[in-house]
Amino acid sequence: MLTLKNINKTFNQTKAVQAMDLEIASGSVFGLLGPNGAGKSTTIRMIMDIIKPDEGEILLDNHPLKKTDYHKIGYLPEERGLYQKNKLKETIVYFAELKGLSVHEARHRAETYLKRFDLEEYADRKIQELSKGNQQKVQFIISIISDPKLVILDEPFSGLDPVNQILLKDIINEINEKGATVIFSTHQMEQVEKMCDDICLINKGRIVLHGNLKNIKANYGLRTVTVDYSGEKDLLQNLQTVKVMELDEKQLYGELLEKVSINEVLKELISLVSVTGFRINEPSLEQIFIEQVKKTE
Image (cartoon, rainbow, N blue to C red; front, side):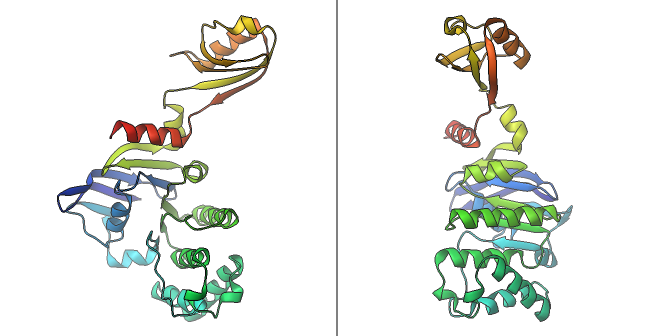
């Protein structure tokens, strides 16, 4: 478990992170979200000991992070940076050795990942000869090659085409299934919805929303339903359980009234028409994100 206790960081009188208390459960996939300048990258850099917090402490499994702990952590920074003159395979092997792998194991794993990412033909080419997307894949390989217990990915999908985004997502799921905790920061809300167990939304350095993603969406407030039906349209104009927003001869779209249960809605609908389809439309994470950020502006 990764724990942040009362973390504060100020740059030139600007409070980048304020009173941050956060627990990230072992084995979870955790989304750290926020608009540009919210404090996401600053928080990640403090976890990685690149910069020090002004106040507070960061704990891994209930003890302060030590230098030796960083061998168990894989990190993909937002600012990409590789040794441009070095050859691709040599670069991966070098970083794998820094994480404690033997030369033999480092080469074996490098070859495995190069094949999986369709980079074998570039193994002996210099980094500077690779496209931006391929360099991104190399940095991702470096971040996970040592089988870290904690993987921190800052905008991991940036610069990747849809096919490679799917591959990256598959590998993230695989390392998580093996027990690794994954933290990633991204602006791509659809990826967060598909992958994350828990999220934390920060704005202006403060946490504005934190918890289990499913629970957040279930409790968010606005609940809309789509009803497919056959019967008389006029019978659905003035429902007691749903505020009708759109209505045609085959489908109704509306908002559940406060404190109304799904059973009550169905009971009323069935008494009036033949219901052929019923869907609860939970709010998207993007909707929640935008509304929460607006509240703190």
